[in-house]
Amino acid sequence: MSGRPSNLIGIVIVAHGGLAREYLAAIEHVVGKQPGIFAISIEPDHVRADKQEEICVAADLWIRAAAL
Image 1 (spheres, helix red, strand yellow):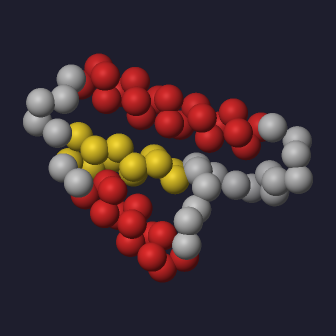
Image 2: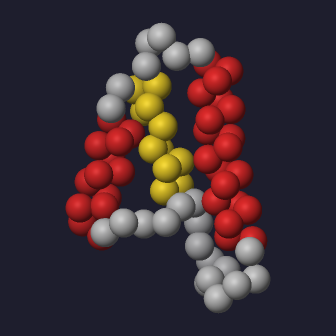
């Protein structure tokens, strides 16, 4: 492991429309930019399988980064 604390967690925010991005913006406004927080928006025309893959990729990115 690198110098990162081992108790870091990742967060994937998933919401309809721009709500996920706005939640992330609110978090960053209060506590600053945070590593390991991802915002994924769901729109009516999105393909469910594609969004599921995007969510899994976001979660996996943080798991891999935290393991370094």
